Amino acid sequence: MKIHSFEIYFTAPADDLGSEDGVRLLDALVSHGLDDASVAQMGDDLFAIVDREAGSFVDAVMTAFTQTESTDGCAVLRVLPQDLVSATEIARRHGKTRQWVNNLIKGKRGSGDFPKPFALRGAAAHWRWSDIEDYFAEGVTPDEAEVRAEAVFLETLNAALHFRNRSRELSEMSRDADTQRVVDAVLQGNVPLSA
Image (cartoon, rainbow, N blue to C red):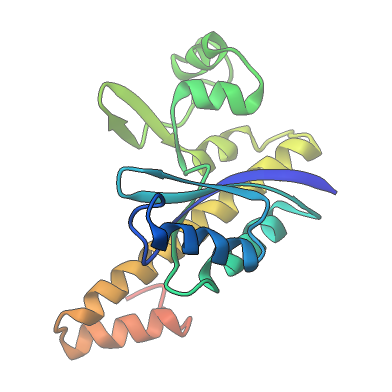
């Protein structure tokens, strides 16, 4: 078995870990099995830094996900490593130098078709991790294939969490019958892929 590391961001009834409610929240998370995590707070964000021994990355994430959500009032928002990565993070995850990645980006190395950035955060370009893994997918080693599978899994999980959280917001608003029908179809897995 291997140790898998990731962060789970979540909402909880306690908004301050230093308060009495925060202490109860920490105890509840541990009692639900999140005893291999450090829970932290940055501003309004609560997150658990998890180092979990499991047979697979998916098993590690999903057991921690279930344990977090089974704690009263907690709802998972997203799981990191987040899908958007900088050139520095690409280098770190692939065990390469930043210069090596920069040469790929500029077309000085590799096939010249490195993915275009998905977003800018400040002055820094960011790419979807799954796009980067698609780029490296040809001729990959089994370890690299596992990293790619983890990236696709997290992208899918985070998209589902985003949809769930947004649909909760939408359900609190008045929505028309067409919107309700689409949301119900998505939740039931009956989404038409073409018009």
